[in-house]
Length: 67
Image (cartoon, rainbow, N blue to C red):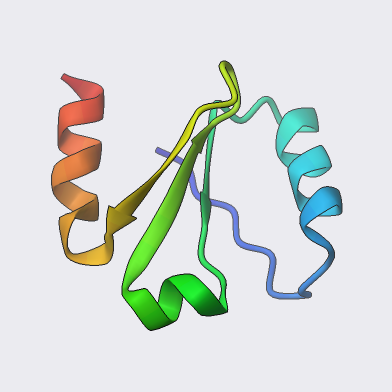
């Protein structure tokens, strides 16, 4: 996996537009509410589905994604 971060804090819309331009299949969203509840939002850009994943389970989630 290649990971690109946006430390400039542009709008979510701008970041998603860039992800689409780069041909990303997935994005991870980590905002204030996700930090508070210790989750990460995983969004599949190919089908638009998204789900919340516990931060402690993210490695396991990606291991299962690639199998």
